[in-house]
Amino acid sequence: MGTVGRCRVRDPDRTVVPSDDARHRGVHPARLARLAQGVGEAFVELLAVLAPVECVCCGFEDSALCGTCARRLRLLCARPFRAEGQAPALLTAEGAVILPVVAGGHYRDELAQALLSFKHLGQGRLASVLAPALGKAIRSAVGDAAGVCLIPVPSSNAAFRRRGFSPVHLLLGRLGQRGALPGLHMTDALKKAPGPGSGQKGLGRGERARRVRGSMTVRLSRKRSLEGRACVIVDDVLTTGATLAEAARAVSSAGGVVCGAVVLAATRPPAGSDQPADGLDTQPAPTQTKNK
Ligand SMILES: [Zn+2]
Image 1 (tube, rainbow, N blue to C red):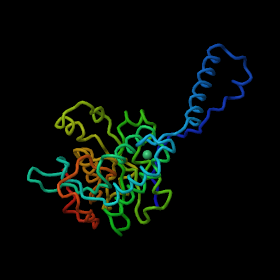
Image 2 (image 1 turned 45 degrees about the horizontal axis):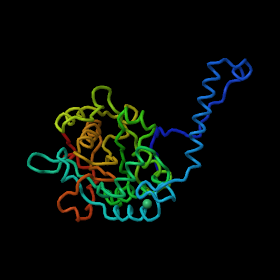
Image 3 (image 1 turned 120 degrees about the horizontal axis):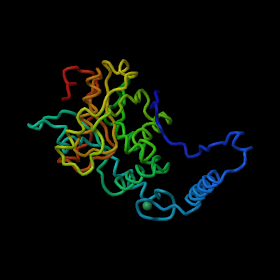
Image 4 (image 1 turned 90 degrees about the vertical axis):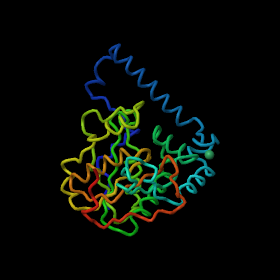
């Protein structure tokens, strides 16, 4: 089972050990100030550990996600469904599907709250409930197919700097560690291309789509491993579909055979969303891979 490479998760336990040289020299006032600041930060972290933890959904003092809300979240993700019908960037003007997408659940209630909190705080308890929900959606999309590449959508550089981790990489990494998706290979093939791809907040839909186009590229080191391979793009939330379409474009142009995408949550319920996911066609078929 492959693992998600370059999963750049910040290590909270990492501490900086001063060199012998620094230990033996006299303590300079500026160094003292830095030391005081370091102690202050450590104290804040200690408080966060000791303070009672509240459920991010209902506020009940238990853990980051209480048992009741965790059960509700699992129910919300019990029946993955096809979600591309509500994403304009994934349909032609005539309504034909450019890229099929399976969603784990609707972006609402406990799923929305837990996902939002997870993206901001990256709490382990939330990941332990969200990762299996994503895994279920992936499994319902690819069925028993083996050898499919799962390709996470990269965070924008700004979001990565802000959070210190990429939510979808973290969830896929967790599934990989637990061997939850045997036969599927997670490949961290995409990266953000330099340029005006980031900073989409406050932009209209059209401008947003234009900015997204050309914003991703396949890492040179991964190109060969994608050629002719069945690929499924994985992201956390589906909104307009512009990001997934761009990821699919980048993978296709590198020779990957994009069969579809999987998201943990879709923002608006598409018509007929009671239909369970009918899976993606993961048999490489070059004629259907051209995503514009
Ligand atoms: Zn709760």
